[in-house]
Length: 167
Image 1 (cartoon, rainbow, N blue to C red):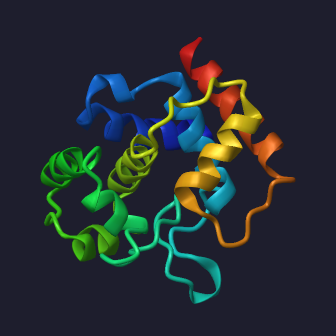
Image 2: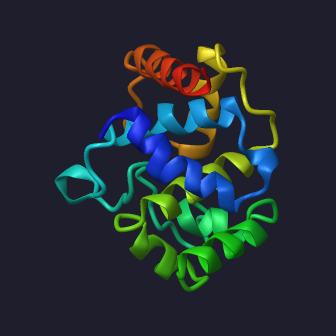
Image 3: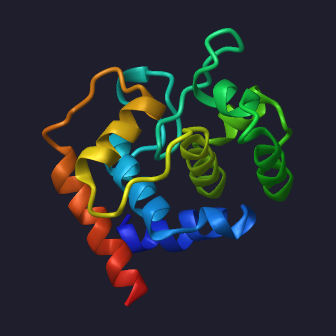
């Protein structure tokens, strides 16, 4: 799947459901960068039988850990918009239902990923801020096996795709 395909079929429809202020070049770059880092937009289930699902490889988490879907479900910044997203996608507003749909509904997965970014209290980094975008990814995704050496190239691919889409 090309980055333009991901923008057209997953990210843009998800952002159309959420408030228009969430649709920014910075958000699009982050969503593409994270998707590239997590799955290369090639797999919707974590390799090796892991628990992560969707192109953005979100785990279910637990109520007590407040990680993954549970964290975004419970967070006051994202909870309401998660319910709107679920209603628009025909998904029950429960962490289990959301998690179970992530590998089948790319629009839902993109929306959940965007809402995950929305839980961070800091502004989204500028599109050319590779260091800031890596820091945001680490804060929100808390990757188990981070690969910082791959981020600059993947981030550059995301920036190029968003710039091409805007042109």
